[in-house]
Image (cartoon, rainbow, N blue to C red):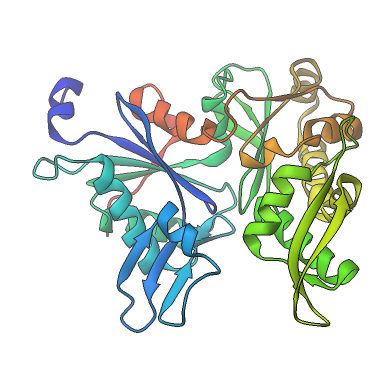
Length: 344
């Protein structure tokens, strides 16, 4: 079947099914949807009340009758039913022509995913209305999205810091030569901030407050323009709301454990890399992508620890989705990076 006829049937699409955000790329149109991976359910009936941004606004503010869940945890499906509903609603938002053939779907998964977890992702794609589901590993998608020459015999190193996992991989000749996938990423940074404030200030922060603080004052390396910010939470001793002033250096101390784990994953992957490719990486540098790449000073910290240049891509939040989209646009040329199994 030729491409023009296929485009009349169902528009092929790619999904970056992330722990924090889900992005949908439609062939010929680009990224059409970028929503938080959050679902609001009726606690009794499990009826879907809201997904995406609308559901995220409810987080931490709901009565007992409503529960807000994140179907993805550590880069894999934690709640299959909620994930399938969320995926179906997102696909319906961008795939209007439901009376034509169902679309082919390319879904990104962490490189350390098990075969059982991979089957769950495929099944969620089929249940959401795909006619065929292909899997692409996140580091490969991130490298394609960053424009790296993955099919050449030179080594390319990509570090993709997402919401649930950090993927580190060395890619050459269209395949992953060495990789590490750790379940430490953006969410763990938020949890580290919550734990640190509980211990140091006896103050309980909400998840949203911790995330906002990470964006506003978080860093992985000393920065020239460090500031003091006001943080509001609930006092664990008196139970009343309280505000404390914290410096960027304190927030950096709170983030030290997850940041150190990411740096260790980079060093561990370099340790597994063949010498010829290690030389290429010294010349070309490490490419940093994913939402966690936006943490200030993370590139400087990795550069400081490895003595290798580090480059942050222009659009770190969308690079995995754009790379998966490239697989959809150039399906025949990039088929070797995809895996597919017929539905059982």
